[in-house]
Image (tube, rainbow, N blue to C red):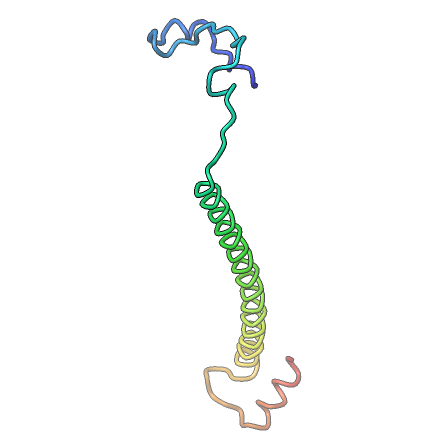
Length: 117
């Protein structure tokens, strides 16, 4: 059992009676429902067992799905980083060796890629 939240007195005065905290003593005796044990019938027990099994399967599938998604996401990020690096090299070559978008000839371009990469 957790203790009740302490409400400041000035705030308690502003609250309507319904919302004010009440001094309730702890229950001394168990209630009727607490005294009686719940015994499930055969069909009810089978239904509960089936639901537990279904929930376990569903949770396992969800866990597997999230693991595969994270693995795919990591692979995709690697691929994107590799593509970005290639794009950066290409951009660098264009900036250094291809002023104004005019080519300097294929031989120079190939050597430019080798020097930048």
